[in-house]
Length: 418
Image 1 (cartoon, rainbow, N blue to C red):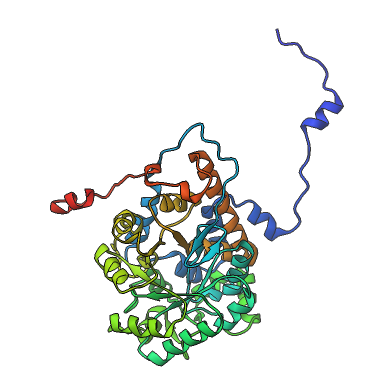
Image 2 (cartoon, rainbow, N blue to C red):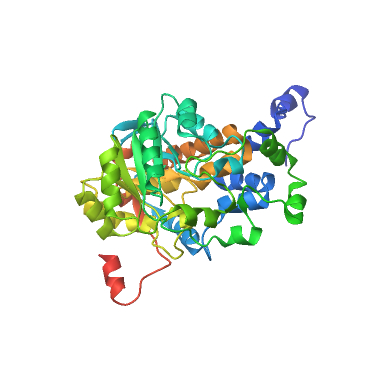
């Protein structure tokens, strides 16, 4: 028989403690976000469709992006038991300098269109977290503005080689003068990819008002108030901003970019130089032979060539080939700190986050970027602890198995298993 008694007031008060309400609406919604996917949901709710889709979308059928994310989902971890890892150290040294975490913020274009604080929020949040921030050639905050937002932290600059070479050269000189320590020479954008969401939305720079955009804006007045009451968008490299994103890229980029251009930029740049957009082992080896400091395995977030190689799948092969001679980094598809841990275990020295950062920005400006970093930090620390490792150096390939749903056929299958 269950023994029953009248409840005691003192015991009830111990069991029923009311949480103090959070009056700050921004903090309340960000605290409720437990994952990057949660931040994406908030971002979608708060951002006009055209701007959100520009961030969220990829090229053509968006297969490259879907496959990249699926590759991280298809990871099997192999933890060690009875290996105390109470104090996890997530810091690392990358390209001659420190980072408190094994990831930095990737370059993103037109960032203030997503949320008005733009690159300033990203750079200042990176500074507070002790991680690198990368400014895009197509950023909406100047090189000098990013330096002001992150005066003592690590700033990197991503370079497109444009038809008007003098523009690119001028940006290199300005970034060097401002103390940026690393240049990301980007090679996967000779022309714009077919970003069909943008075409269907009629997305352009600056935004063009239609009946559809007005209707979509009605439940999101804060975005338009911010857009209309803050300084005009400024681009680091474009003197004109009229047209779709694809039209702007095609007008500015040069499909004749070559190794000669890399040689010229290397001669101008005093710091570390990495090549971003590498998608096969042969190119990685050639670049290392030419003396670059590092490479970023990337398919541009799936925004250029659809059905491009999956960077995370390519990682082990590239590390075996050139990992001892150059810094290998990876981006595209990272949505969880466990994705970053898996990348480091398979030999990457560093990773870059793009959309994950932008989801936080759209969800809550600078505080949203802080929340992105906090979520990823927590996931990294928890994954490392559960694996039984106390530092990034202890992560090894044995900790990870890459499960595959996409298996090459014919003779390529043999090569893929080597």
